[in-house]
Image (cartoon, rainbow, N blue to C red; front, side, top):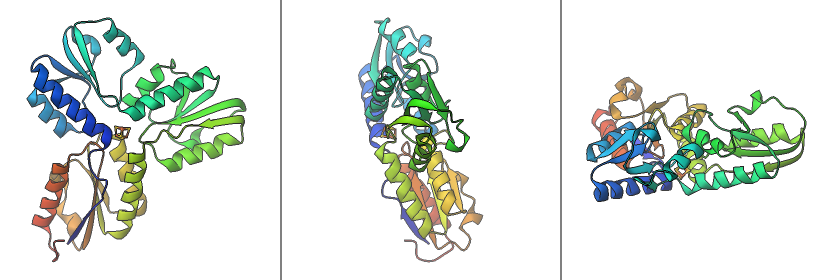
Length: 284
Ligand code: SF4
């Protein structure tokens, strides 16, 4: 069996940076180290960090003192204000610079009097956090086909960093005819676009595609969707334990890609599993 791994599979820039900052914080602070929500969307990594001393809390008001690591998705305006008022909590902000950039664009649009359309998942922490800075004055949508289009003078279109570029293009198409002015910020991070493009190319070449990453990871889910759209035999897994060996029957080429929150070691575990369980010759 030949095993092909996408070049971009694994940690992205923002996640690498967040993990490094979290580990440095644990080393320095030792006790009373917290992260607001899981630091990345990968339960295995989060559990390992917890063992090292980074406790996950869900509400910023749950701590009175200590060090709080803010994850790469960022935090809401309310949370940020609470932290500013509490000098006993020191903050390590790992918000990805791409998310910070989205925030600036959003604020610029709202100040410019645009009706904001936001492509994304309204329950995702990144989206919730960003929208809090504009008092949720935006139409959040996942599917451009479901947009209720009225006539607008000024429309601002923006996206969650992990969305599919095709959906953003489709939204431009739908909104353009109903507005005098359409301002679009392509806030889909480059890592996401490159990863998705490579995943599609790889899925076209193989008989089985494995997409590795947290089930709660938005970018991994999107990767799985793009793979599934070109190869039916695509599966989203969190670890090799989920691989059903029947999937491997008659398979000559397997493709592997992984979400931005997946460490290289997890990819290696999948490769090892495939090699150990391959029935085909040529363990490439
Ligand atoms: S996927 Fe992009 S926006 Fe999200 S953390 Fe990684 S680099 Fe930053």
